[in-house]
Image (cartoon, rainbow, N blue to C red; front, side, top):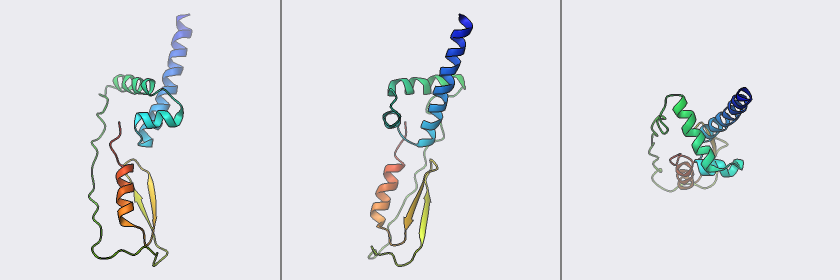
Length: 120
């Protein structure tokens, strides 16, 4: 009976470890990721903490977030693409934002700010 319990436990641990890994890759908060995946946020948080303890890391000991200042160009900005150029902005969490030429700089700054918010 104890062997079956350990096997079930390690199976559950492996499943939660995969979920926590997807959470960390997503860049979402625990609450947002849990809602998206249909998981209890409390369980996800608890497993994240347990797995970090087993790996010898304190939760939240990931690399500190870095902020990059974005400055809008001076002068009027065009809203019509002048070329077919597309920019790719690679965010800290690995997500890529493709931006067409002639983009609205203020909207891009706002979007990057939302995507790079502090993750829990």
